[in-house]
Image 1: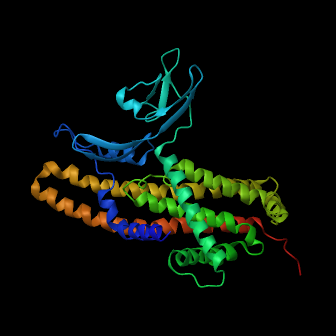
Image 2: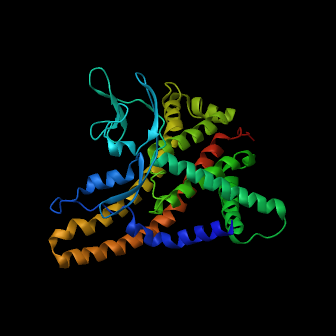
Image 3: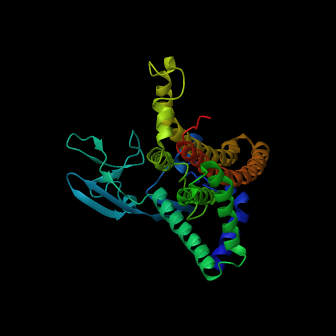
Length: 355
């Protein structure tokens, strides 16, 4: 674990400048072809069936990922995505290059139209998700083992850093936001914090196994928001539901049910805000870094002087955004956890005692 701690420390120190080399666009065979910045950014923040690492000359270094898809006509297909490099169509399956299924595995139906099979492939985001989850479990189990061996000893090193994070979130966020009975919600909220924080940090590292846009994927943030939504509303007190459907306001606000309808909509807007806030902030951060990197290649035809000056601007702002993104990685995990705790606390409201 000491070696793991040293690696993590090195990664954290290297993060501010890491963004300079993240997702550098491939050199075009035709120098006259201009770089499509929009397509380049969308390509690098979207999911993929292969993990691109780098390109040396004409040789692309990448890691093929397992494809697992079920077709209604041909059954199960399990193979590595590298098969698509040898032939664009393999076992009747191909990766769509355009249309609404662009970048996804499709097949042709009897009418010759593209349809999606049941796809449970290990994509780039899925692999990154599994890796970050395993890494998080290893780190937490290491800290738990340290406490089990010496429960009263003051922790130092990696265990001390983890203790600082845990106590900060538990004592300054979960406990005051939820109040009485916060203990049963602490495991979920701490897990959410470390899950979001770990994936945010890994997303800033441009080399394998980092660089995936996990928390910038709306499917991931949606699942987290739905879990919070279920915990809030299943664990809500009777007083919470009473304030939604029959609040303590004048009758004309309740019949017709104008205020209850507003409160009912609020049940769904809260998790929606959780989902969009995390997704939009992380996605925007990745897009800004990629956009700044593209300045070097967009200005290459404007002359040596202009290109050199814009390269300097690109490097400076990439380093600056790298520091900002490092801070945002923690802030977004903190905010998601805090808002989840606030929503849970509001759902556990106690009856108002009249004096």
